[in-house]
Length: 206
Image 1 (tube, rainbow, N blue to C red):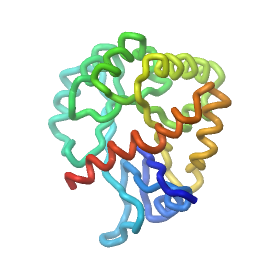
Image 2 (image 1 turned 90 degrees about the vertical axis):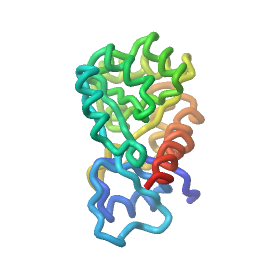
Image 3 (image 1 turned 30 degrees about the vertical axis):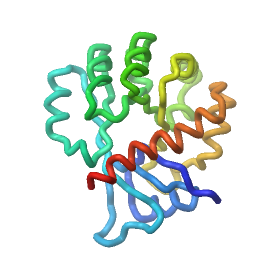
Image 4 (image 1 turned 45 degrees about the horizontal axis):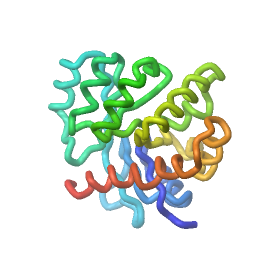
């Protein structure tokens, strides 16, 4: 299998989980929790740290951002208000902005317009897209197709906590086309070039 996929959001990165990533064609992974012994990094797969900030106010977000080694960490903000969503879009320390069922209402045309201007990618988690209720999937459908119309970049994270959570990337590509009418090329970019570039940028500063 050709290896070129990148996972922008894995939760637990044990050796077992990363081995499975590698078998499924992943070369880059951003991890919330790295559980690797010293010297046990896998050959052929690049791993960087990731942090997600849940933010309901700009002032709290500024404090949280000031505590992060952002040059070597993938920084994702989960905005809980429109004000936070707008503000974090233009902060260069923020790598992606996370869309979930909890904050889907803050992503409107105005937000996508600002994200396009600042070239800030949207992040979406695969389990939310595959396993949510029909109502939530309908909301995701509208947002994702709006994102495509506005030509905003996006990335997909697996949210993998264990070896049984990881979905084959080819399955994700097909599911996105079937469930959300997304062109395969758009989904492939969200699992390859766009997240890989973000991770590589952090690796340079490790």
